[in-house]
Image 1 (spheres, rainbow, N blue to C red):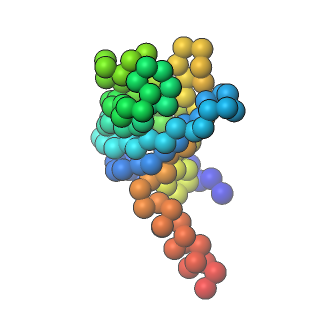
Image 2 (cartoon, helix red, strand yellow):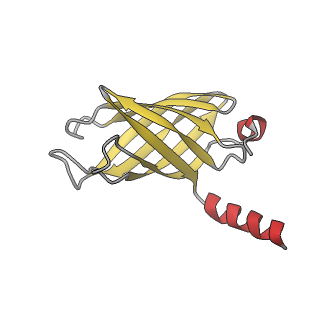
Length: 136
């Protein structure tokens, strides 16, 4: 179950693997990698992903991240490099899971919005070990 204090205690600094989805079912979720640095309640870092649409389709896109964290609530803006074509800025609002291994929520830009999920690198392995330990 969700425990806001547990998620609030774990630092978000590290490597994360994520996916965001479009509101249209015809588009597949877009995978991305994020490197986050948390200092006090500030959040920064970078994101890389493969462009799935538009004139830069197939290229690797780079973006910076800047935002804040308050307990289990996370908000940040992803700002793409200028050469990323029509991509500019995307706002993310999310929640850190109780175990600190996931961040999930919604993204918005212009008239678009969708869901996202980020999993801490190694988080799936830790979760599997935790489940095995409980069963034994």
